[in-house]
Length: 106
Image: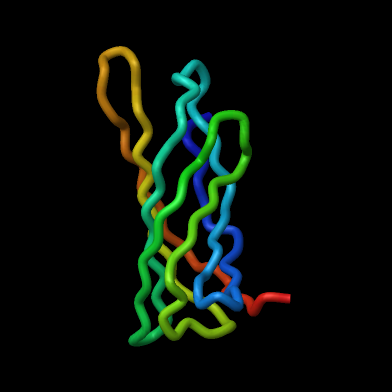
């Protein structure tokens, strides 16, 4: 099994940000190091960007961005993970896209 990265939820928060989450898993025998995440959400003419991370031992990544006019409903989502490698030293990138449902905070 390879990297498994997806969008699972996007929640509008009262402070004007959006919290975005999704599952994240690595290839077997990959170094267990944290990954940086960049993402974009788009609803019609509204486009926002955000950043987050995945931490070793967790099954999900999370990140935040300014909500910038997003509203409850479907959004197109695009993400990029940057994961450090040991041998040879360097980085691996993984990108993905899909739909995510934006919901209002409870």
